[in-house]
Structures are given as C-alpha cells and as structure tokens.
Image (cartoon, rainbow, N blue to C red; front, side, top):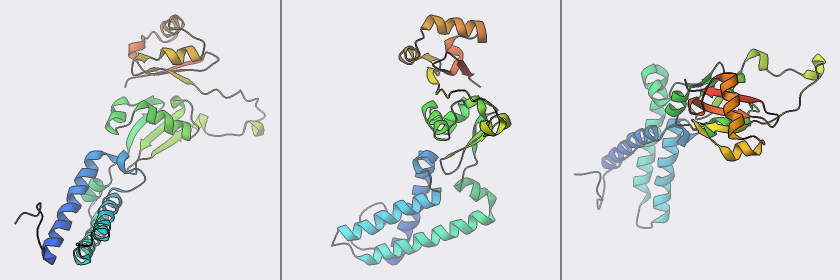
Length: 234
C-alpha cells in the first residue's frame, strides 16, 4: 500500500510510518533550502514546528478528520525529536549533519566571496548585518562567521575594538557611512553621483592608488569626503 496516496482509513502503524517519512523528508527539504530559510531556529526545531503546525491545523479545520491520527503522528514526531537530540549529543557525525559548521565569510578584513555564495548570502545581506552591528567597514573585521542558526557573528580587529575616545582624550572624527559604488565588478553610477563623484574620478583613483580596474573589485565604497575603499575577490 502506498503511503503517498489517500486512504479511507489508516492503522496506528501506518500513521506512524507517515510521520517518520514526513519528518525525514522535511529535514532534507530544510537542508536543501539552506540555513537562511530557518534563521534563528535550529534545523530540528524548524522541522518539528512546521510539521506539528500542519498536523494540528488539519483536524481543527476539517470536521471529517479525527484527532486520533494526529495525536499518534505528533507522539511519533516528539519521540523522533527527542531521540535526534540525544543522538546528536552522542554522535558528532549526526550532530554535524543537523547543525552545520560556521562558515567564515570575512577573515582579517578580506571578504571570502566563495564562502559568501556557499552561505547563500548576497553582498547586500552582508553589509546589512555589518550595519546592524555598527560596523561600516568590512576591513575592520577580524572574523565574521555565518552560524548554524542563520546569524552572523562579528569579531573586530584589536585596533578597532570599542574604546572611549573621551577617556583617551582623543578628538573623534565625524562618522561617515560609506556608499557602495562597486558591487561584484559593476559600477553603480547612481550611487557614485550621490557622493558628487564621477566615473573618471573613480578610474583615476583606482589606477593611482590600487592599480585595479572596476571589474577586478568585489566591493567598492566611498564616503562623502572622498575616502575610497575596495575589497578584491578572494
């Protein structure tokens, strides 16, 4: 008998088999979608929440569906969930499969473009996370890790870690948020005009200071005062 087709009635064993199939299918589906799709949730938590939500909703919405099958299915899922946690604690291989290792996306100020793609993040996603943590310049980051819960952990270089300028008696410069003018080798002319610069100025700066062309650059930013910074593919 196929478990993928509708049946008039199901035994407790058949309900259990359906729950097992659904559990492992959704684990694989969640892994395929990537960690960003389940941000702030562990893989197992996401799968269980998704399945149980649907199991509970169906009998509540359909008066022809009894509660017995749903209760059996939920019991099996809870057992699978608890068992998976204990197995993860005992077997590192299973734990690694359920919780992916962190991915280094910035190391010593260098953006790892290949790792960024592996984490299924765009440059916009990375810059957004940097801004959220009040980091305007990727070169100040010693290490940025894409964690298994879909979040990004940042560690600033020692010289850029927060220190009170007032306590040190240092006159602080005004803060300027850089504007992205080059992204993945493409010039964003509209953004360049925002800082009152043109393509000729940019090409001159790139050649004189960095000896690079626009197509060589992963990310390029400039402040309103004209401070240009670039990040190359690595």
